[in-house]
Length: 334
Image 1: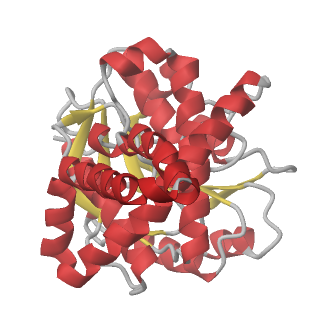
Image 2: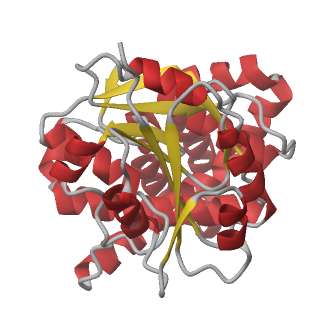
C-alpha cells in the first residue's frame, strides 16, 4: 500500500534557536515522503533564514496575522495528502513521520492528535508541571476527541480545506486548536488520540509566565464557550480541561465570603477558616486522580508543591474567566 505524502506545516514568529533544533528533528525523519512548509508570521529574528537553510518552503507574511491564519495559508500551499501541524518549539522523534504515514494508510482515519512526552529538558517546577498537566489532560481521554492540539496533529488535506480550517479570528496563540477540534466534531469528523505519537515541547515557564498563560487561556476558553453556545458546553465538556478541575472556579467563588468573614469578623475566624480548608479539600478530592498520577510521575514533594500552586492558580483562572465575560460583553469575542 502506497504511503501518503505528508506536508509538515509550521507557523513561526521569533522562535529563536529552538526552531533550528525543531527543523533538524524533522529532517532526521528518513522513512517518509514529506515536504516542510514554514509560514513566517512577520518575524523580526532569523526564523525565516533558518527555515531556508533547511530547504523548507517559506511563506513570509508582511504583517503578523497569528498562527491560525498562518496555518491556513500553509495548508493552501501544501501538496501533500496529509497535513501535519507542529509548533516551532516542538521536537519530533526520528520515526514520527513514518508513524503518521502508516496511520493514514487506513482510509477511515480522518485526523489524529499526539501527546507531549513525559520528560522535558527544563527541570523547574512550573515547566515540569505545565508539561505534565498537558500530557495528563490528553492521555486520560477516550480514543476519539474533540481536540486538535497543534503541538502535533495531522488531518487529511481535503477534509481540512472542506472544513474551512482554523478560525483566523484568533490573532495570537490561544485556543484556536481547541476551537478547530470542536468544529471537526460538529461537522461529524473524528479526531483519533494517538498516545504513541509523542513530541517534546521545548517551552520554559517561569512562575509569572504560567499564571499569565492560565489567565488568558481561561478567558479565551470562556469566550469560545460563549460563541459555541453555553448550553452545548453544559451538556458535554469537550475541552481538554477536566470538569473536576473546572469545579475549582465555583468553589473558589464560594470561599470569597469566608475570606471576608475571616478578615472582618474576628469571632467567625475559626468557622470560616475551617470551612475554607474543607472547600479546598473537596477540590483536591475531586482531582485526586491527577494528584496521584502526578505523585507517581514526580514524587510526593512535587505533588505537594502542586497543592500550594493551585491555591494561587485557581483564583487567577477565575479572574481570567471574569475578564473573559466582561471582554465578550464589550464585543471582543476573541
